[in-house]
Image (cartoon, rainbow, N blue to C red; front, side):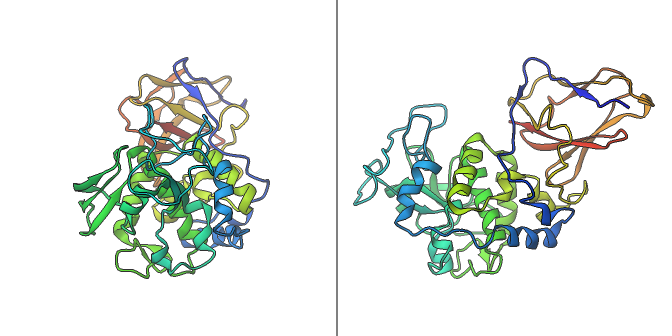
Length: 358
């Protein structure tokens, strides 16, 4: 049987999802899922090359640089528009501040008070970001959450206020939608890298020891699904890998959230074979709202009447199965919300691909 040929209509864009993952980097985690997968990943990414706190200033220009050369601050950036202010590396680092736009500092997205300033958590770049000093101060050590009534709003729309996320009733900080997935994947990284540490020292922490509290886990899964991995995160992952010599597995393989924290029924983790079609496409990205069909064309397929395609969400739940007996086949994606999906071609090879609707 010849290999299937997948063709996308002209309005669709091919964008590689994975970064430059070294050969065999994740091999020891192969075929695992759930807690066993989490433990395997922990042993892969632990013992990284820890930076000093002062070295973070010199790391940010490689990890968090905008295309225009300015500081990429998720607390002040305005995607698709002009930000109220921007910072120059080194020149504008804090220092004193009294309002937004004064200077940028080193933000622990997982507040340091939650883990008693312990090392190497204190300087791990995967949860540290350059952010406006004043906004960082207003965030304080509040957990992330969905704000109901805001008591303060930053110039880019980040909020502080009362929490409407089920399971928590205190004050929370809500970043803008474009960076919620970034922070979620930072937290998932922390649950693997520091699963043996206590990140729940304070009552308002999102962690109990090294694991996310149930309300926090559900919130961050939602943010992970709603805000897929961006090219910014892929580039940041590579830059941090060059400095710390470890990676964020949830950027390399977003499906790990489902395999560790969900009911992923597709297969165990496959770090090498999930994209057997890699020479053609590693991921498929559609615009939001999605329009049109995913068109699949086959050549010389035996028993073509038995072909079907099954779409799964990142938690491994079946979304829908499509009959592919009519060749070529068009699979409508117009009614699916933004997020990560997998589709499995149910032919002899049982090929699985990543699908991104954003």
